[in-house]
Length: 557
Image (cartoon, rainbow, N blue to C red):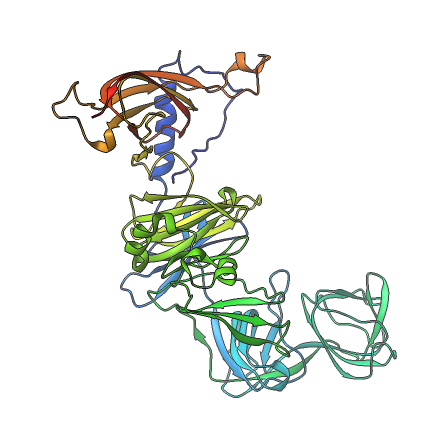
């Protein structure tokens, strides 16, 4: 994880060669650190409780100083800015006149207290129950004028209509054909008649209204007459609910986790508890049925991710709804059985998970700065790799930026939000990495071999240094030793970054692979390699293969 440095150009670009200009690399690294220095932690104390991306902005949650409440903050060019949560008003006693809908642009729906005369713009609403039969919940208001009273009627603008002959739907923009007034439809309530009979009458709940409509004028949508305005001073204020108390400032509870969850039921859905799996069948509240799908297979909290199938961490390892359906709770349902000892050791420490669409990965995070990444393609596990972070992650999200590209952000225990899979460092600290190959006997498991040199076939975008550690006979040695025991070898890998010559070359498009030779000294029937690297600014390299030169010796007795 890291960051990209940005700058403003003054004058035309000048081509500079890093090989000829010794100061270029230093200047680039200095620019990166300059950008890093202006990044600040989310205000407050403790770990970041949640992080998300919405409309191109990053939002984060963290306890405020003192820990009495939490705050929501939004990223900006000036740093983190606290988001006002608005003033809340509880309500009940809803009516069939229409459900108010928040306005997110233009002029939002304005609600008024019938007794107090107080008013406020509706910024958000949540409730339980059916609106037409009596719901209760909370409204979030902005631009409040006056003081709402307990149990007073709450009114909102509704446009009365009759002689409706063509259906008007939520989301339509309606226009008065004589007054020219416009509004956006949030809901439509029919009190009598039908559209098909040309006699529909009722109320249109609106927002972003531009003025007073004319009685009996046509209500049009895209130039098509839909109904007639029924009233001389429409829209009028109609009671939609009752105040349940007075207004109060909204706050967030400290601690816990804050997540953005999108519920989008299209047919059957899956519900998973710690030790059971359920399926929700149906398409609406009229026919939903929750049935036990499988008992004995469940998910560790915060480990469930929807990819081509739903993955989660079970007591037996990483599994999915697809494999549970096919194999039940048997070990064959587990995708991580090749690293089962590691999973069993870590499963009680799992705290978070995320999907990485660009890499087809499912990632688990544990509470000790470690995690695992599983690459899953065409319903097959392509491999599992453990990793270690320099900071403890406390929240994570996979979202899209304003250009539609996937971005992954993590909130950490030091209060920072970091972009994951970005840059070349752990927020300015080096990234240690290694790969260990399996031991290979080169087709003759009993023949001793003197290993002489290695030719690493690699391609790299930046020069870096690798440390190679050969290991013989599964890590053991002959006794007495017939040659010096192998130690570490270093090799400088040169970059294969394109230059102007590559652009005009007929071989352009062919991967440039460098062969780095290392002389080694060791005897064994087999050999494995540990290849290490640790750097701050060097980009990752790709190991294409290794050519091993050795001389056969005698048979091991």
